[in-house]
Length: 373
Ligand code: PEP
Ligand code: MN
Image (tube, rainbow, N blue to C red; front, top):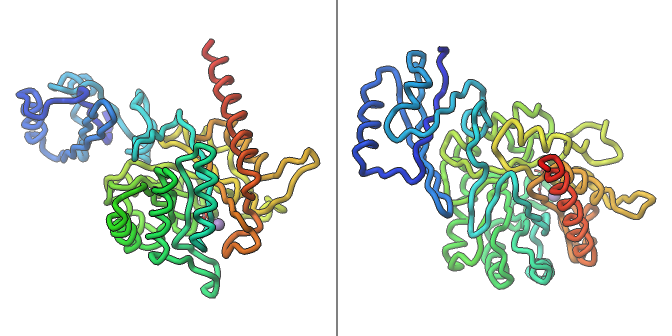
């Protein structure tokens, strides 16, 4: 057998005080040239323990490993996305729970909100509107990676106290928020602590930082916050998936992969070439939930003769293909927005957008059910 990266999946809720678990560990200790790492994934009901074997696994047969005490299944990984990838005989569940919400390849959430936080008033208008529509997720950019150093860079940590306070007031559970530097994680942590943790944060890695490996390692080392990882806009899908793996290899597997369009003028007049055909591809290659960002893909408020905005059309294209999350820019006063005003949807379009997304999600579920019938 060639040397594989091996994942031993132990019985659910394995008792770590038990004799059989002890036996497994002492057997693993006895193997020369093989190191092992133990990783627990705590779900709402069960804890799954995985043991990674790294090194010279050639001499170990699958049957032998399956027969080890407390081992339920064995996954042999030869491909690059070792942890986040979906491998042969790999029927492990996808996704994770965070702040009372489930994110998986079978769930669906909309994260509508401000591209960049500007005023408290606009944050409040946005979150109040979401609350009235029963929404519990949003996007709020505090740290903005800008093309020009002279453009507005985001209010940074200054705005965090009011963003978190208002989010708590309107029952928001998860805010997608980009970080561009390791220190931003501490700033978010501190501000959430000071506010009494009224809400949760999903750390976003922007497309300009997809291959900022040191940032990925830092974000991957923490397991408090899940990560929304944007595909690089000028690299292959394989390169982006490998980059996402950096997060997992450092310990954080709560990763959602976001498509946001590719930088090429072949997509004109859209800001980027919409790449939502890759939604099912990523679900096949990996166990990550997949997000689409129609705002940064289309980049305008253009609409087709049927009256629907291009942004809504591409959103539907992503959802009908099984997208698990939509990240979308709204703004109560797009003319006053400091970043990306021209692509923002308006407050009076929120209901329409959410209803349209729900129609298409239902159609997707019907497509899957038809297949199983
Ligand atoms: C954003 O979502 O605000 C953003 C900057 O996106 P991207 O990194 O995809 O350009
Ligand atoms: Mn933006």
